[in-house]
Length: 116
Image (tube, rainbow, N blue to C red; front, side, top):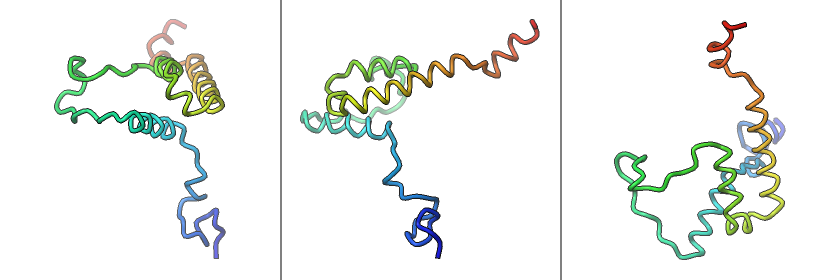
């Protein structure tokens, strides 16, 4: 019989038990939903049609850095998530942004390489 880590004895296929896998974005979304429940807020009516009409729905941050700034500014959410999680998550994602900005994309190479 195979090991539990390989889907054998545990009956799980695809590797280790999923409850041990951390999904920070899922944690943040679930915690934000919990804040709404605790505040007694009712969900808005479903948005039908064009979802980018700013008169009908809030505009979400358009970049990862803007999203991270919005998370950091949301003290109710960050207090519930905890300082350790929030600091680690923000640090990790901001490092990801910095690493991306040091990378030359395929588009940039194609656009500018002929100058070399």
